[in-house]
Image 1 (spheres, helix red, strand yellow):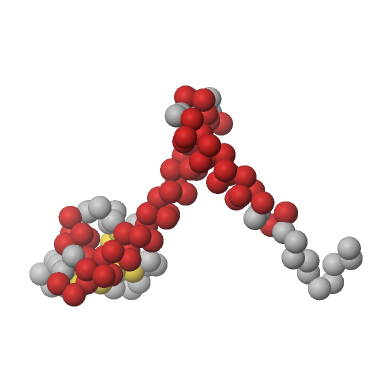
Image 2: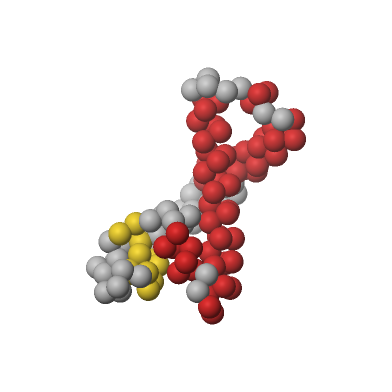
Length: 112
């Protein structure tokens, strides 16, 4: 959720990924004030870029949520449509390959 900076009228004038001295309020990206700020005149390109970036983040959140529900036995992977199962398993496999313990990169001082 972005941190927002408001002007004296209460309108959002800036968004930040990290807390700033002048931006301590957090709002969800779907909040009307955030959307209105993003969609003002010349910021349409920025709005599309922001939505694209948060789409990627949301994909990971949904994947993690599904993993959590499966771990807690609240759903089974087989409860999902086959297409969803295939996509989730493929992404999980790729993510596992890129985890640090599977890295082919070795520190300079490491003995192979």
